[in-house]
Structure formats: C-alpha cells, structure tokens
Amino acid sequence: MDDVGKGPWLDDDEQTAWRSYLLMNKTLTTHLERHLQREFGLSSSDFEILVNLSEAEHGRMRAFELGRATQWEKSRMSHHLSRMEKRGLIRKESCDSRYPEIVITEEGLAAIKACAPVHAARVRQFFVDVLGPDRMIALGEASDEIVATIDKHCETDCPPEVRGPC
Amino acid sequence: MDDVGKGPWLDDDEQTAWRSYLLMNKTLTTHLERHLQREFGLSSSDFEILVNLSEAEHGRMRAFELGRATQWEKSRMSHHLSRMEKRGLIRKESCDSRYPEIVITEEGLAAIKACAPVHAARVRQFFVDVLGPDRMIALGEASDEIVATIDKHCETDCPPEVRGPC
Image (cartoon, rainbow over all chains, first blue to last red):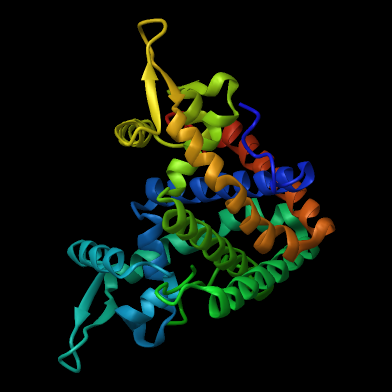
C-alpha cells in the first residue's frame, strides 16, 4: 500500500527521526505509567494532579488553574477530581462559596511523597543518564522552542472558536 | 509544600529539562490530535491504526501484530477495532478460520490519504523545521538510545509477571 504518503510527506531522515521520537515517547511514558500504577496504585493522571497541588502554595489550587497547568478538558478534570476525592487523595473546599478550591489531603501528600523519589530515579535512569548533561540541556531548550512556536501559531492562526492548542 | 522532593530528586537543570520535555510533548501531541479530530474526525488512535495498516502488505495485519506495533493493551485494541469496524474504516476477515485479519477498507484508506499530508505538514512545521536537520537527527538517535535502554532493562530487571514495558 505504498501509494499513501506521496506528495508533501516527510523525507526519509525526517520520517526516521519523527518515528524514533514517537516510539521513545510512547515507550518511556508507558514504562513510567505502568511503574507508578503497579508500585503505588497511581495513574499518571493522579500523579499529575498530586504533583501540581503539592507544589502549590498551601497545597491548594482552583480547578481552572489545574486545568491550565495540565491542559485537560474541563469534563475530564471534573470527573477525575471526583474520583480522586472519593479515594481520599484530595478534597474540595469552598472558601468564597462560589468556586471550590482543590486541596491535597494528608493521604494525597503521603502518596506523592512515597512515589516521587522512586519516579525521579526512573526518570534519571532512562532520560537524564542516557542523554548526559549536554544533550539533556539541548533537548530542554529545543522543547521550549517547539512550545513557543506552537503557542505563537495558536495566537495568530487558530480558528477563533478553538481554545488551547488548536 | 516544599518538603516534597527532598532526597533523591532531580537537580534544577535535570528538572528543568525534564519538565520542558514533558510540556513540549503534551503541547505537540494535543495540537496534532485536536487538529486531526477537528479537520478529519479521526482520533489519534484511529490514525495510529490506519497508518500501521496502510503501510502493511496488502493493508492487513493480525490484531496481535497491531498490538505489538502500538503497545496497546489487548482489551483497548479489541474495543477500538470494533468501533473502527462500525465506522467502516476497517473490516475483519477470517482467512484461517481462527484469528481474523484486520483489513483497511477503501474508506479507511481514503481517510488516511486525506489526512496524512496535512498531518505531515504540521509535523514539519512544529518539529522538523523548529529543530533543523542536525538537532532533529540527534534527537532521533538519542530517542533510539532511550528505547534500547528501557528494552534492555525490561529484559533483565522486570518482574516476570509483567509483559511489555514494566
């Protein structure tokens, strides 16, 4: 079926690099997620919320701030926070009677404290140590450039009805 | 809540590079996925299956081959293929009466042909062109090293009950 991709497709070097990147990302993400789930019973979504809250002042954020930080859709955030609340990892507090704040619980804090160093050790093993300092810093800078390019594109070229990355 | 992360955590440079990489990956993935969905009505999962099938000999693969290529869990694959079959993008054919082959339909082929060049143009704009050839090739090579490191780890250190990335 080799007639797919004729035309403005990527050349061989571009295709190879892009597919290597995609495979790396999938392999690394899958590995880190399965490890968190197996060893700590946390999904990557749980982890992302707990990291954000644990780093916020007084361990609390508004849901819309969490939405901005995670780039999740509103309905995904709402459902996921409800599930985390049932599991005792967060609670909702209404201090101005309109929009509740999302607060990390003692249990949530214990969960993130337990898994964060182990998770970091895996990031070190499979990302930091494989790349070495020079390539790691270069990748960080290249990543920032890609994000800046997409942000600029979204500011100027996105359909007006689209919110967030278009 | 700055007492999270004491101990074997990442240092500032490592943390900065890792978070830049995570943000880049999320921003790029979200952008590409929303574009595919909005312009072509395809999810990234649909796209991944259609790309694999369209590149396979005669546009057909066994489900387990698709599972290996995508690293999806079996139940996710089964559910997703059923949904794609209902939408007419693939069909199942039993040629040895035991395991059906998954075959891309004319409609599926038309869908991937329509979106592939537009998708590739976005990959060029936000990945290939931002990195430039040298950094792009370096990132591809670094990605291969990370995958090889994780594969080696999984061969030697994974709990025996774990299949795939552990």
